[in-house]
Image 1 (cartoon, rainbow, N blue to C red):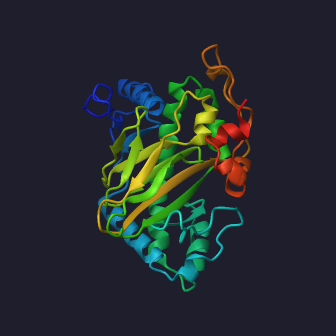
Image 2: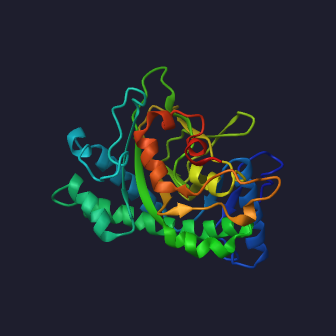
Length: 316
């Protein structure tokens, strides 16, 4: 069920305890959690998930594995790991001097993770491979459970199975170097281009969510905490009922910062469900080819620099 605190009255992001044994479809706890998720997505574009399926030992080993990855020579990290634009190494950018990231698709697949691992470590690295796969499976389960609740809360549960068949996951790994004096901005305010992102943090703080009144809420690191973020494609799918979460990373500690993003992306074309179109929410988006949107976002400067790329790309 939801956190004991009254999030709505305190203008705080809702917290949902997905480890609650009473959280079953049809239960009172389930219904309450669906309402709180609905509120969080419309008010903030996100909610916080408490989830005990990533034990502290795995949490620690995961971030040690990330340190090993980002300690590799730059020439190793810059090797091509995907044919898709924008999905290989990102770093050494004049506009984002603190930040670097790497990622790969299908992070629960032994073959896919082993393939990425062998690019980085030709001799192999079982510790890295096993750590990221062990993390990704509970994230896959959390995504499935939380997304079912989203679909149910919007009255479109009939579409849940087909949605799950259409998506695939990507794991993106992030490092922010130690800031120098008077440097604070890690990544400026933005929305993700995925459908949903589940973010998990290292112990170093920095993640902030922007509210509708232009204030920022700190998302404190916690080994059992995962931020479920609605991204641009989810906003479009919902016909603007769900808010794409605006967030940024600020560098306030003189330590390197690591985090992970477990992404969901949609293969094929999404349509706004007919249940989400009415006189208050007339149709606002044409059919959305998610991967085509991401391709153009990564290759078209005009689209990338527009005020709202998803609306520029497929808005009515």
